[in-house]
Length: 264
Image (tube, rainbow, N blue to C red; front, side, top):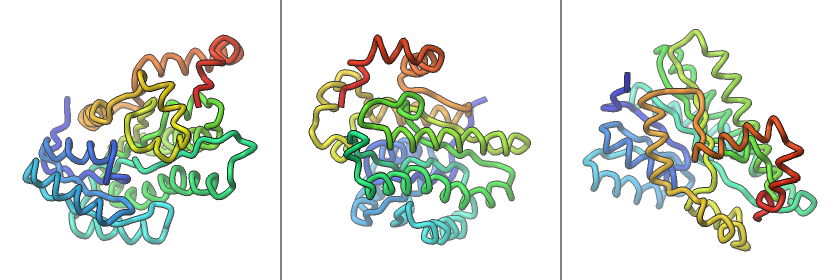
């Protein structure tokens, strides 16, 4: 049975643009109350106003860098105090810098792990106590196809998303006797500002432009995941099949599809 999102409190990290903003708008259209979290107060304020104008629901928003653990604890305590509950947490914040491994800067490596991995860990730990108290909730981690199939110049980013998938699976099993769902979303490339930072040369974006998903499509699929929880979704579906084939025949895939995997 599909879940009714009316009056649900949905916390979204990285909510000021891209997938996060699309998600916030879409959950509000279904009667849920989005709680926006991102680093830019100016962008959050603009996003909140836009959502209110289109839906009549006024989201609350919190300026937060998810690499700051103490700030995360404080922010989530404020959210619970104001809304009395958190029904859904969507760990969406994340970024990439594509480089050959030998050229990767240690600051970029640390930054990706701080946001993509430790941010997910800290936000999940911050929300779990209130969910466990109510014995209800849904945690959705936006991972990536890259977490299952690493490609040249994305070694570190792929490693962070692989870690997110491991965390997702483990926490799901730890919570199997509760009414708290834990899901992973594994999208391929999406048409967002993500690549402005990840792909400074523009080569990757140009090479995979025809394969890029619309943020609205990804948002709709995540909404469906909230309504009908499952352990994992791949976007598009055929990429999920490709990763399974790679897991069984890695040498064959790397040999046959080597050029296609080297698009950055």
